[in-house]
Image (cartoon, rainbow, N blue to C red; front, side, top):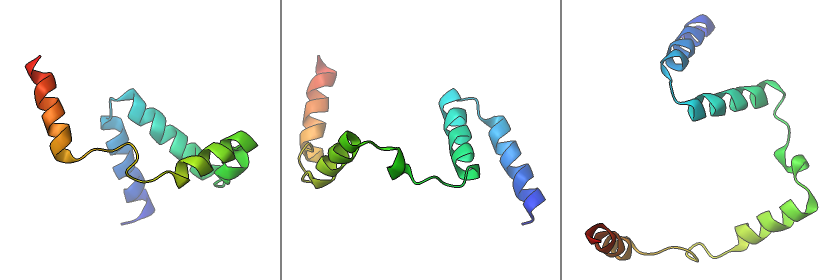
Length: 80
């Protein structure tokens, strides 16, 4: 597929989007990509780095529940 064909395909897809959040996300992603892909870590301050490190070190299952447990809770919630 040529670059012109890819451009036309993207233009068609974007023209069909009516969700403002998706369009905003596409615009931000395109802007970021065209600016030379700044290292996002350089935008974080020391507190942000510490928070990110804490989140990364949390156990994976800390705030999770089994699918069965979730389904039981949802079933009870739907009955109310």
